[in-house]
Length: 404
Image (tube, rainbow, N blue to C red; front, side, top):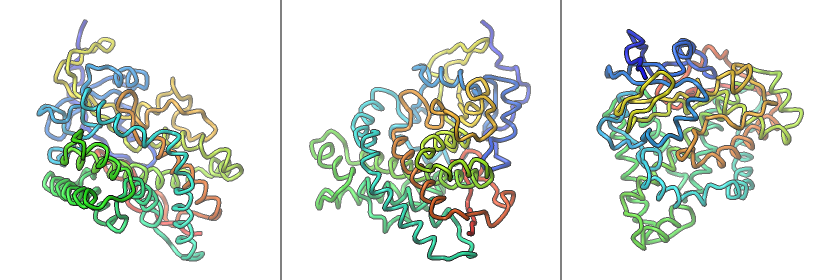
């Protein structure tokens, strides 16, 4: 067995930025040509592996020799802000700690529970569309701040039992934690502010219980001593941040991608109830907003003629894997009639996104109602003027000006 540790003399910088918000970085094509596994260089000079093949990514995501333990001092750091702000709960843990936390939460995120929330999500989406329509035809509206962000923020607040009146605070702290351009100090400050917020909220709820998943965890796990106060605060922060940030970016980019592909939008408009679910899966594949899954090798792993050594960092960019032609023919085309359910947008294996069922319902209802009630919706600026969030962030746009 050989290793191509030095096969790439000057590994390209990683993460990479998108040129178009709804397409992967152009540099992924060269990575695929050098791949399916090749070397890339992080901001601090560390050389790690990038896996660009769908098939290899699936195999490695279920390999127990790849660790998600972000408490390890040698865990790879993709951008400076990650040296300070680490979402450790669930996503940053290995078994058995990961399994214990996941079992505590999974019942609140099943398909059945997500479907039971449909009436509430429909109410939230309808209210946001009503607010949009109040602006009237011809008035430019930012769909990010008026629809894509408030819909999932409201949903996760109601699910957790977090006051939505605090949304501006936690949305701003989330942005500082997750945007790649934040410094380590900014990210650390935002992380501390959110932990402090939940520390106080948990204390208040313990004295005066309310309705929500957080209240259930306090009564069923914190009070009996199965969870510590700090651990619960960390879990709550993770659920709040993950529960609105990725879905908000998916909603905005889905609208943008459909507006830029009018033939696909027409198909959705012809049968919104029948096609929304399939369209959602294809959009999840096509957009892959949570792009860079990160791991560290806990033991040597052979991948073809490559040896990933223990201690090596490994990145699995989902936007590359989900554009693999052997898994999805004509992968760079948006086709909302495609059966794309096997995509890796939510990851794969034991760390597959716990909130995926809720996200699917929010996306289905959001797209169906938005385009159903505002059929003349269109971009107010060309896509080239919007730019894209930098690599190392949840992918999306900062603003999405629309008119009808």
